[in-house]
Length: 637
Image (cartoon, rainbow, N blue to C red; front, side, top):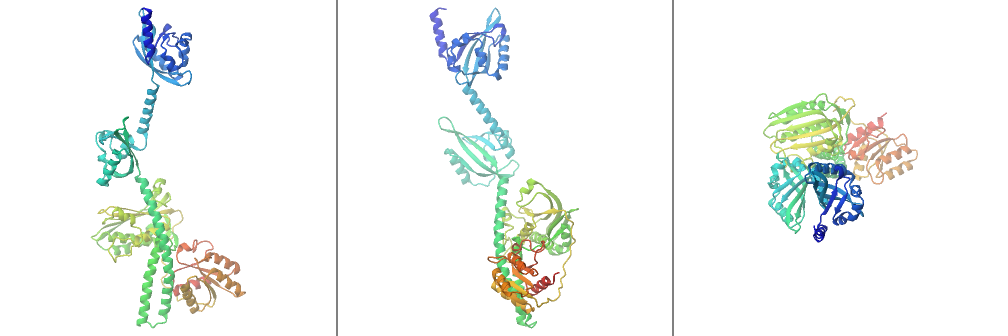
């Protein structure tokens, strides 16, 4: 070939993007070949001039990535042995940057006398393409393995792709949804305006964020935290939408439970405070009413009016007791009880209560561990749940009381705020009545909330149950469906201590006795102070009155050697509590007896029953109750 023509071809080869080369392959070894010629394009890709490859036959094998040596050798040997063209991919290190560049190499064997003596090749730098492929591969892996549900749809809303998390969440397989629209997930919860806003947002090129209530393949609804992002082509036109979603059904349920628990706690604090103030007033009403009745002739009109006052006050006192139960401040006589014994002992009462139209079924599990609770409060829980069930079945039905031992796992305990994992005793009351919708279930334990018509009940029955269960360190939950009945489940922690036998207190009490001892009476509520002092003096006691702890200490210090036999003090008072006062009085008068007076149990932590605890007189109290408690405290050994 004339020199001019050869130079022309070489110039053309130097100008194209690919690196063209000729390599001898002695003895068929792909790594011992001598570079006979390589186009100048090689310098822009690897930083080496062609002359350097001519001078150093081992240069290009040294540039090869160690991880590619074996694969490249095998591919090259296959090409040489077959004598047919082939494609190779490998990485070579750049001279200046040290970076490995991906090379795609089309190879044609060079034959002489039927034997392969070398190869002709055209190689190009495909590093950018390989990076894009790797990024796409990693992205595909991420999308396929992410825990969030991913859906890709065209601009028309037709689904192009869903990942495995979408299939797991919705129950729809990829084959079932590709080619359809996301309308198949609609639950009917959202109105047309909601979807109109969604589409207006994403078609305008903005990201939509919101919570959707969707429906699974099996009909179950779920809450999904959804983000929908428009995807644009290089010209800026929207071509696709990518939707990512996270199932927040459980977290939202726990969040609502926590909010409900916090709301109930706040209402409980308010109810406890109201009950405390009412108990102060009722103490005066009940006490003075009783003293008034004693001075009236039985059977007369004034005596009847006094009885009416006391009856009304007792009804008011019952309301405050229910409020205290809800707010978890009701005094408790804690014992280790057998829940089956409590339920069995009430069978007769419950059957009479529900009437003949309702069938009572008892499914009491055995053996059953003990629970630490107040027996009368447990009876109140069962009674209120049964009454609630009865009222939901006006035309009759079946009421089932079930008990069982259950093991509450860590995950299950987390579903019930305030509940600890471990062994529990379950009380379950199920009816076949009218049931409740979700909004009603959300408020069912709130005080004064009732679904009954005006005049039927106070709306405190289930709130009382809630408070008692919480105060007993348990949990109560409800499951209900309109038209399909309701189930209340009470979980109480099981204890290992021996169960105590249930016994009924004596109903008859001896007439109250008085005495001649000296009592230091401390009460910051003037009306309660006046009534209590009057009642005590009527019983023969000498009473020293004080409106605060500071005043009581001054009376003791001024009394010198005067003996005081009993400190009768309210628990909650400004500046100095009854507990602090009792400790300081005991230091001044070591032999003195102490009787605490409380508007609710929360005022007297560790009161009756704790080591060294003082006895407690609960408000509202009558003159008779006061006399018995004072005499009992003075006579205690």
